[in-house]
Image (cartoon, rainbow, N blue to C red; front, side, top):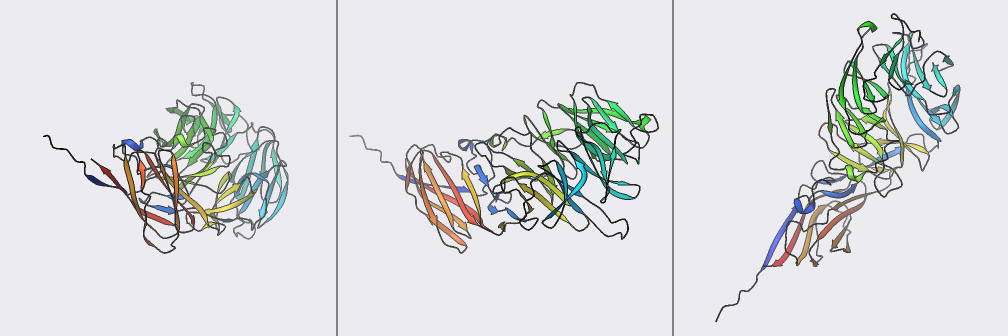
Length: 461
């Protein structure tokens, strides 16, 4: 008589340690189950989950009706004291200055479209230069406005070796002013001029000064301009051709590199070549990048983006050197600006829904001091156990705050609340049986930390 082979109960433990950030390029069944399908307000760069979103009122609760902000770094020409100012182009077409929560209209600065703006030291005085194709160039010295009638139309401006370089006058042309004088646009070998860039990379969109060169971002590429004092020695070199269309407002200088968005992804440019950095999170994003803007603050780049299925914008925070990233949710980010002056160093983010600006920090104290929802969800996966009928008997993790855990098994979801507010090891026993699982952690609070997740499965083999 043949003996019967009896199956024995086996135990398998799956460790989500480290707990990973969003990674949609590696499937859960291919070993990517420790990475997230979705995550916001959690920083995963240290291998655990740490709440990261912190914001406070910038103007003590006042609404601004702003479309775009500008930072005017200024010293008073009489006293020599710092007189930095926040300025904004508002929905009524006028530019205002803000002091605390009060705004004051700057008469003479009216535009029919959002103007570009840049700081400049003109004849020893700190000024702001504003310009657009529908309002012309105007210079504001903190007291009055001076038009510059001969300047070409502008879509972007950059100061490089004391010249003002602009894009916007002609699709393939980069214009530059006389050196030390952005009001002089007389075309001559000794004064102002232009560079024709008709080389197939498309129209010029944005120019930035970076590491001793001027880089011109085109519709489908990047051109490097060598432009020192003597314009007869200016030269242009094509460095990069993009397979996707570049979005000029997203171009953000991040110390020793530049990050920009294109139709085929997010790129890091080091002055010589570009590397795609969005493979892990790119599929999370809504591909409408027309209004994406960025700023570099305290070692991270911040961009306002939309994710698929969401009406409000989020903030994508990227470490440009390590590649770490996370999404911040809770502010409908319409504009982002760095306020870097003598007495102010802040990241200003305008909430388009609340119609007012917030000051963002890298901390985890919540939005306006209130608790923030932090969320992390794994991919749906068999967690590396190709046994169809297995039982998730226990989930163990460390947390310092109440956590809601959701377990989804073959499409059916159960919720478990861990309410202890003190740090330590937490355990839940789902006893959920099936083939494919996903697990999520949600905590509403400040200074939240979740780590060392361990899943115990039982099965017969």
